[in-house]
Length: 374
Ligand code: NAD
Ligand code: DAU
Image (cartoon, rainbow, N blue to C red):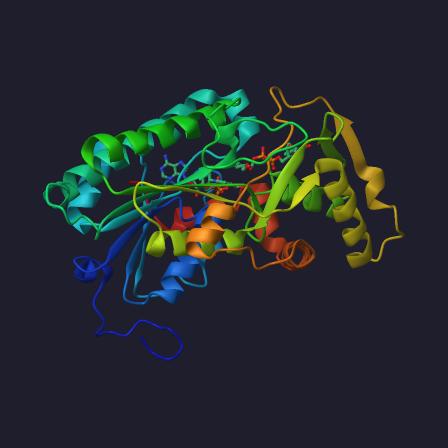
């Protein structure tokens, strides 16, 4: 690779390098996945990073334009639910590790259409577990399987809801309420069952709400920013009293890097921002930041706030106790909320074409031109 990071004609292709440390990242074209792929591709030039993504409505290769030319990066369009395809892929690339983020991720969609969550989040995960188990079987039969790791990215929503007090720890019992969180809980259980039954080296992290660049504008923060910008109403579910614990997405990606390299197989780590916000307070804050950025009279954007029917089964409060990952691996969030929100707002205002492409569906034309359907 030259100094600008461009491909060198003599450098080996990802396939030639696949026998070295070849890591499968699933869902890498999504919000969090794209930050994880970028971090790994840039930080670990000796790894080959294969990004497998079905490019659903949430997958967008525009999120990865800055690294798509790197010689240690390869994108593959495919579905984790297709077990023959997944087995072939593992056979070809001989992945030494998997970081699994691919999922249907939006709670409201899971309420409208639960079956996609069952197929992708549960069956898709089990397909990956089976393929990893088959490929790594010789190593699993010996004592040394430390070269392999199945890293499952999960959510704090598996723990259900908190009342006014307390925090989710790794020991909190699972109590999911939405089809989304039930499907993630189920996939977590399947990962643990493969670790306990077959000795598959696996680790799980359960993280709180992420925010930042490339966040699909169906989720609260980017939806609110987009609507404020376009003078559209901001829908607040119920009374806006629900509480979420927000973490800047790059801090999550750094935690994933740390757990991947230093975490202990068989363990679970909670990741969170120690940053609880009532939805209505967060939206009011976003309104005041946007008024300033858009030179509007203070109070203009807040007029767009509209209380709407509550989400069915809406969990009241999530908040993470992240003391285990701090104590054992030394991770703490590095981005203060004010700083992270400012970066996020600036990013959305500066990347109008990304937002317009996503909201109009045009980004699909970008990838459809580049990658034929499998
Ligand atoms: P996202 O919806 O932005 O991205 C999901 C990605 O998975 C998309 O690129 C999509 O195309 C891909 N995908 C979906 N179905 C697929 C399939 N069948 N085969 C291959 N690829 C498929 O989601 P996100 O917010 O980036 O979340 C990523 C992971 O992190 C998920 O597992 C989610 O449960 C978990 N998580 C998210 C948050 C959060 O706040 N967003 C917090 C904690 C955990
Ligand atoms: O906690 C981690 C989870 O955070 C992840 O596992 C999920 O993948 C991710 O989508 C997110 O789930 P939430 O349901 O918490 O995120 P969402 O942005 O959809 O909603 C945040 C809060 O805002 C929630 O209390 C519902 C509320 N809300 C949401 C939307 C989209 C509104 O009041 N209005 C809205 O329009």
